[in-house]
Structures are given as C-alpha cells and as structure tokens.
Amino acid sequence: MGAKEILYMNRDEVAESVKEFPVAILPLGATEQHGHHLPLGTDIILAKGISKKIAEQTGALLLPTMPFGYSWVWRDIPGTISLQQNHVEAVIKDVAHSVSRYGIKLLVLVNGHDANNASMKYATRELMDELDMPIIYLFYPNMEEVMKEYCESPTWNGMIHACEFETSLMLALNSKLVDMSKAVSEYPSTPNLYGKSTISLGNLSESGVYGDATLASKEKGNKMLNIFIPKMAELVVEAYRKVK
Image 1 (cartoon, rainbow, N blue to C red):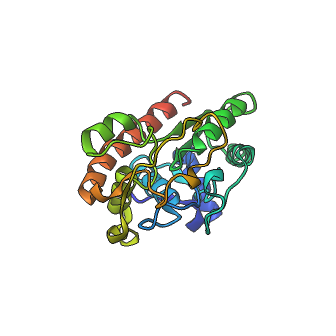
Image 2 (image 1 turned 90 degrees about the horizontal axis):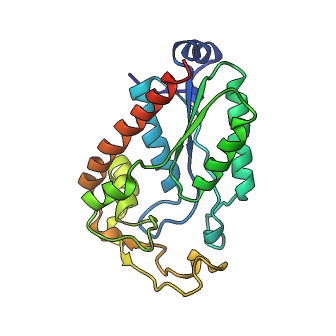
Image 3 (image 1 turned 180 degrees about the vertical axis):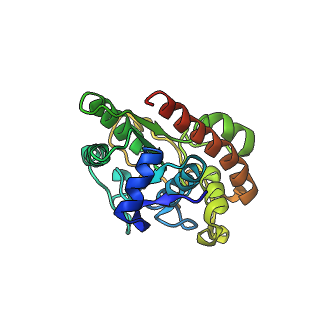
C-alpha cells in the first residue's frame, strides 16, 4: 500500500479515500540549523518520512508537511525560519477545522521538532472544545527507552538535536543529505540560569550539535524506526477504533 499524499491527488481521489478511511496525518517540522552535517530541513524530513510510512501502513491521508515551527533559539543563524508559538498552534487548529469539514474523523499530528510539542498539546486541548473530531499527537513513542537501547551516547540535558539519535534517523531515511565527515561531538557547559532565563541554545554550542553525532549509524536509525513506526501506526488504529 502506497501513501496517499493529497499533494498528488485530485479532489475525487481524496473524497474516495475519506470514505474508505477518514483519517489524516499532519507532519510537523521546522526549518533550523542542525549542525554542519545535517540539513536545515532535518525535522521536516524526519516528520514526513515517518508519517509517510504510517500512512502506508494504515491507509490514512498524508497532508503536506508543515515546514516551520517555533525555532526562536536559532533565530540568528542563517536559514532559520521561526514562527511564534501561538502561530504554530493557530496553523494546527486551522488545518483541523479544514479537514473536519469534508469528513475526516481523526487527525494525527506527527512531530519531528521538539519545540512543537507544546503547540500540539495546547492546540489539541482547544480543539477538543471546538470540534467533534479527536486529534492525537505523536513524537517518538518511548523515546528515552529506545535511545537507551540503541544509542551509545548520553543526551545533553535530555535534549535531542543534531545528535546521535537524529543523525541516525536521518541516515536511515535519507543518507544522501548527511555528511558524516562534518559530524562532531559537543556537550556545551550548562549555565546556572539555563532553563530559568532567556539564555539561548544558539549561543551555547559552537557546532550546533548537542550530543555525539559521530556515533550515529544507518543501522541504529533503522532499528529505532522499526520500533517507532509500527507503534505509531498501532496508536492511529487504536484511536480510530474509538471514533468509529
């Protein structure tokens, strides 16, 4: 079963798909720096790649990937595009209202950018009071356990960014866009006021890497995706059963 991407479908094909399985997936990404070895579209590529495989396994419609997120911490680095957090929430809500009008019964948000998690959470809460259509939001289920099993390096303060984890996933999904000759390991010192002030991540790491990207491999990425994707597909099916 191939993914049903609405970008390449006509209105009749979309209408027929909605009748067969009224579920839509919205991948959420960001355009921001990911060190010197990964492209700025890493979060977009990961969100779309994973969403496409979920769509293939479930029959859900795949919506276009949202290319921008809340990327304030990287705002001074060339190439970064950052939306205000409330704008991210507004886009999610507008998409939900749009798809609900023509019969979608479940909207699935698949996130590739950590900072989008708050926007997903609060947009979904507001939509619960506005629409008779449930929304679920997914971001690497059981990520800590999976990373503990397959990644050799620790995280930097629990954060994933251009590290072994993300680099491995990128190697698995699109290795041509990864330049491992530029991968580095960097664990910046943590200021006492980090997380308690407006200290920006963009000013802490020289390379833009938080963790050890040099330990990444395609094999690790595939093993982790083989856990994440079936679990996410399972959650989609479970959520849909509750609205049928």
